[in-house]
Structure formats: structure tokens, C-alpha cells
Image 1 (cartoon, one colour):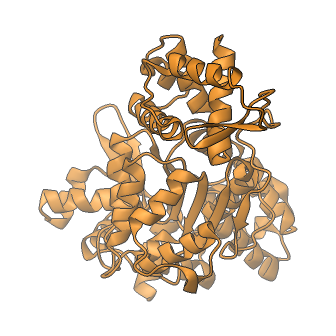
Image 2: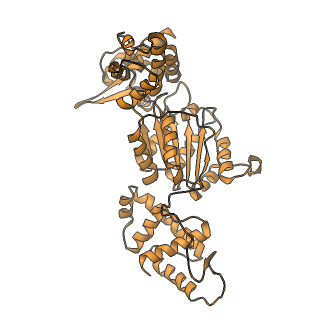
Image 3: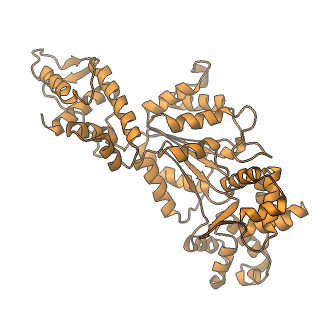
Length: 458
């Protein structure tokens, strides 16, 4: 048998028993083994870690071994598959099927079922987007979409976190991403943590959908291992929105409220162990477990959203029917291309200045209306006392500052200050400027203006 025939028969054996074809990475592993390639080379071709390839291979050998009823490994793969083919061809039973281990295969002729050439396509994807908001239209973000699709579809990331301040467009981006890649999954589920469900409630809800059972039909004591089993057996895309809702106010970024600490265990497990699913987190703050896994594991990644590019941001102002387009760039730069901030300010310009941007931008101060202040209050009110001291200190400076300058102003222990600065970075509240000999920090202009006047007014 040549390599193509071995791969075809192996795929048929797995499909007849499980109803699922080998995915692209599993096919590449089988082909690589037959060509005496090292796992490191396969990992390089698929832009993933060698450890990930080894995990997938180990799971594949076990699956084929269970089906055939004998141990299969990289060393005996070809001989085992050839022996099974010989067993089929030489069989004298005049039946439509012959048994191999726990799977039935057509005896004469051996014809695999028709399959789409794109093995990642799932025409019967089951989708649950009841918790997803209706956001339209969508502007720009082609680069970010490509980056996320590559991480999920090509690099098989287990956890992808989309970070950014309120209004930056995390949810809109994730909805567009779902539309682009949903056919690569068997299940797509969107859940919001805004109402702060306990992990047990979330797990039960997810398993209920994945198992297609009513909640009262599930066994009691649903646990994390049961959910992980589903994520191993099926290719699932799970989006958790508003992850910051389960973090404590008044603490550094990523500290969970009481009774929600086990979410950290969920993120840690799903980032560490092998499965074929992807968890997408949308949050103002980066979870600590994700930050640690990101540093150690290529299957966990984060995308911090910047403001929209000039062209895309102009589309928002055009939709809001603003005039004097020559002044739009100044307005967009003042509000850092944040889509929601621009929509709020554009509405105010319509209300007060009949859409004339020039009348608005002639004011020297960066203006914040009450709607924008409310958004910023929600984020700044969650900060620890040290974080509030730090951003107040930075807001008083006209230029970016070094940590040593902040230390001299606040007289804090260096360790406390550095931890708080890292926390502010994980909340996307400070901007970092790398220079040749030191790193400087600043606040976004809108945040700085709010800290200077908004807090005092509150």
C-alpha cells in the first residue's frame, strides 16, 4: 500500500466507528510518521508546538488502538493498517460488512463515504447565540480578524482572549469572527457572564446544549471533567463575554469575586490540556491564569484591541451624518478611534451643532458628556486604591513618566507600585512608550481628562 492508500483506509476506519473524519493535523501526523518525519517538523508546518503534536498523536494512537482492538503506535502503523486491509480483502464471508475490532467496514468493494474536500467544514454546525447582542454595522478590523482566524483555525489555539476598554469593539469583532469561522466547528456557543452565573450553572448550561438534553435530564454533580470530555470529542467554539463581571472591585486586575475562583481553574485547565475546541474570552481585564499561560503556551494568546484606523472610524462619523469631513481626523484622534466613544460624541455634535465637527473641535479641552463619563466611571470605579493613586498622579503630568517618577511622587513600596502598574496594563488603562534607555507610561487622553475632572466632579 502506498501512503495515500494507508491514509484513506485509516480515515475510513475512524469514520466508520466515530462518525468523524481525521482532521488536517491528524492526517499530517499519519503522513509524517509514514515518511519517517519528526514531530518537530509537523509542528513547524502547522505553526504549533511539538508538545501539541505529540498530544494529538498520542490521542490518535489510542483511538485507533481502541477501534482495532490492538496496540497501534508510530512504529507499527503501516503494518497494522496493511494487515487490516488484507483481512478485509481476503475475507470469504458473503456479507455486506465484515467486522474489524469494534467497527464494521464494507467488504466488497471497500468504498468510503463521500466527504467534502474541506474537512474543517461542518454543514450541520449547531449554534447557540441567544446571549449575543445584535450589533451592526461592523467597521474595519480586517487585520484583527485575520489574526484571530489564524490563531484559531490554523494554530489551533485553546484560549483566545480579546481585551480592551468598554466600547473598543470586542463584542462586535467576536460576532464577525463567529460569522467567518463557524463552519469549522460542530458547536458554536455564546454566553455572557454579565449576570455572573456560578461556574456550575455555566457548565450545566453548556453540557445541556452539547448533549442535546433538557436540564432536568442531566445527571447531578456536573463537573469540569465532564465538560472537558465534550470539548475533546467535539470541535467547539465557546465565547464568554463580559468576563470582567466575575472579577472583584477594589482589587488588582484578575482577582475573582468570592465563589467565582473556580473560573480560574476552568481557564487553566482548558489552556493546559489537549482538546480540539477553542474558548474565546472577551474582557476589560486579562485573567491572571491567561497571562501566565500566554507566557508558557503557544496555544493561548491575547489580542488587545487598538482604536479603529482612520478610514474605518470615518465610516462611523459618516453613518452619524456628520459634516465638515476635513475636521474628522482631529476628532478621531482626540477619542482614539474608540467606536462607542465616537458614536456618543457624534450624537452630541448632532444635538448641539447640527453635525458640524468644526464647531465642536474648536474647543481646546477634550469634552466628555455624561454618557461617556458613565462608561469611564464603570471601569475606574473597579480599580484598587493604589491604582487610583497612580492614574491620578500620571494625569497631573503633561508628558509620559517613568516608574521612578511615580515612585518619588507617591512614596509607595516599589513592589506595590510595579504590581499595580502591571494591573493597569492588563486593564488597558495605561499606554507604554518604549525608549532607548527607559520605559515611560501615560494615560489615554480621554482617560486622563476623566481622571482630572470627572473624578473630582463625582
